[in-house]
Length: 102
Ligand code: FES
Image 1 (tube, helix red, strand yellow):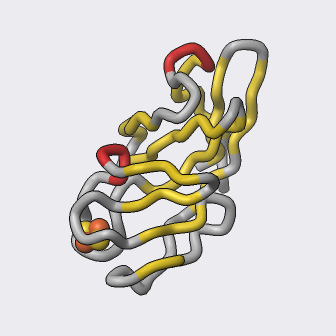
Image 2 (cartoon, rainbow, N blue to C red):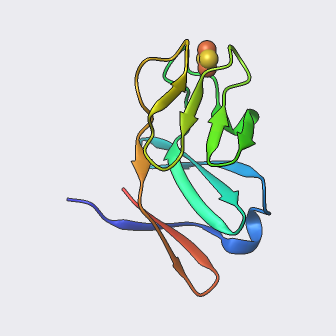
């Protein structure tokens, strides 16, 4: 069963930035893309580099290790060497808080 967990405040993640959080047994990164928050599994599916250290480009994140790119709306791989998609988590904003459904 999924549940909503408060991970951050809206003001914690400025536009164009990402931050990684640990919640229970998961590592989740939240990206702020023009005021819209996207939550996804924090580790690149290629060799587990932390995507929070990578680069945002539109609605995609690029891994700094070997350049794999993922769509942050679907989790889909946009560029190799990764082949498996990211897990995307639903985000809910309530007042100033960011909740993620895990
Ligand atoms: S670990 Fe991300 S591209 Fe290799």
